[in-house]
Image (cartoon, rainbow over all chains, first blue to last red; front, side, top):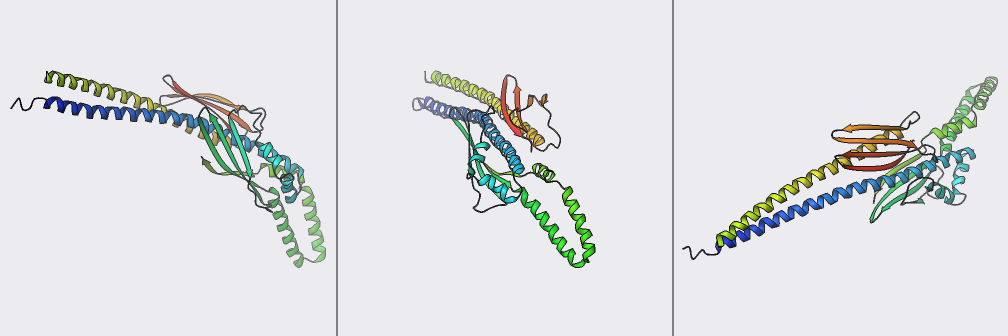
Length: 212
Length: 109
């Protein structure tokens, strides 16, 4: 009986040994890959923040550019034409200028996506890419710029409509007095104060954040 | 002879299992710390960015050291000279020798 079983213990031990060793090795390699993943997450966070910093600078540049354009424009068409004069080229170049910051290895691309003839808002797509060694992180956002003169002109249109309706009910003398008052009020509202109010508004909207 | 070899193999197996369990546990602890550090850094940055972006008053530069659980956080906010409302946020999260440093910019809206 003993002779018949000779060698079977060693074979069973070898089989158990190889199976359990295999399980241990798999566990170790799984843990190793998890650690690698967590290190990648750390690198990903650093690169993501770099790309987002690029977008923040684009936002800042656009904001100061828009403030200048508000100063030099007096109606909605002039505002839009300031962007369109060289097919948005100078605006895009100034917006993506990060040379004065300490950001390194960040590339910015801005593309104009404004519909032809659109005056109410401008649309852009910005892509920030940060590169470090073999790692790369791309972030894409959409940027919308509202034309602040649209709102102002709408308010003035409403005032005009109100005046014309009231004109029908007012007798001529009363209306003259009313009109004089309105004119005085309008004169007191300085164009510069309107422009200052425009600058305080949130004219740039960043949306559709995408990590590529 | 066969029994001696089997015994030796079983002892070796026990050692392998012990060593691998110990290292797996140690690595998982390190991994947990790494993930927690990254999450804390991310949340802290998002929180600060939100408060700076939506601040109704002038943003003031600061340097602060705080502690969240066992993690030490050092953060510094400085205004960028060449940009109007743009700030640089530097953050260091550390715990027992392991630390990460993240730099990011934020613009006040």
